[in-house]
Length: 273
Image 1: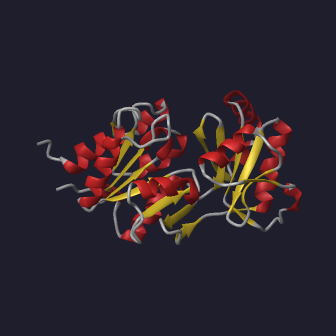
Image 2: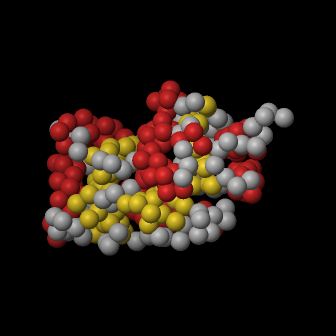
Image 3: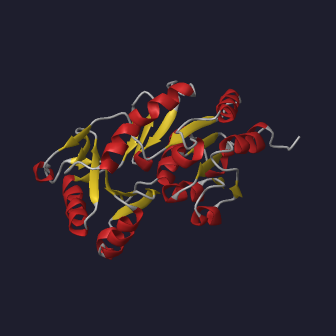
């Protein structure tokens, strides 16, 4: 019998292949783990709307199924009930947007009340809207009240432009936020207390689990905190070198059902029989 009670997996570059699909082997392994009593938690930078098709596909729609959205800023039941939330302010959002425009990179923001908002049209914001099945609203950010809560602000552009912009950002500003790179084209600014690791930890506390009873799997910078937190932190074969260096185990890549390999090895067949 496995000692693990919860497995949290990243989506893009981890559970999903290049076509944003879940392999048959991954689906079967997740179903078997759920049958064995292990909680499967999707942990993503996406909003809940962007995870719903996968929650339906994996039959993770019970009242006791949970998701981490916006890189852990929101921990929710799959029906939308919020367990914990971390937020930044409209003032934060406008300051980060001003810096983005000063450095010549595009940006957008996610807000519970407004959805996905951007100060101008761009291909990266449109892409984020499309993969998450939500509309993109172009608004004048000066209209956002300083005290209005927002979830996260993102700089979105070519990897080279984002690297250059981040290098110019004053250190005292960067230190006010959790800053993670979810893809080469997306640099995310979250509330300082928000990351996938703190999100998994809060969910574990809610469920009465310890870190030793948790597996976390990911491939990119926004997965680092949860891989460090987990009793078994797993890097995908296609993960960055930074993630592989801190992982307890490196599995197959996302084109070869690396998530299923972990479930089969550590949950379904932990004795190696």
